[in-house]
Image (cartoon, rainbow, N blue to C red):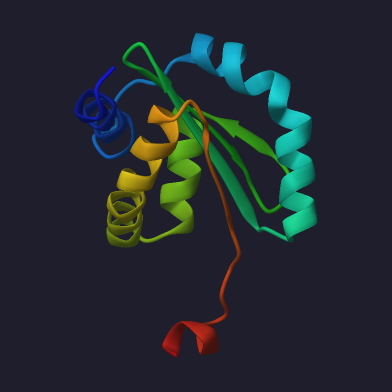
Length: 123
């Protein structure tokens, strides 16, 4: 699949509230859940999310601060609630090229997020 097609489906799913694939989540991400949880804890991440895309379908997993697992549309909603809407959109647009590259290379897009306190955000 072309990078432009991958980007199109990522934008639809992540920015335009498109439907995500439960089957793709179950096929690709569910079995990796223990590894994702381990990575989140080892890195001290507050939030950890993974995105995959195959055959025009997108799936997403998010592990929140309490280690609760959120899938697909729920994961997107939790991430949006964590950030202001404008920050969510800006950040996803910033991450999009990296997502496309990693997915095109056959990897998942995986990232952990650590909260900044107000003093750090002002720097």
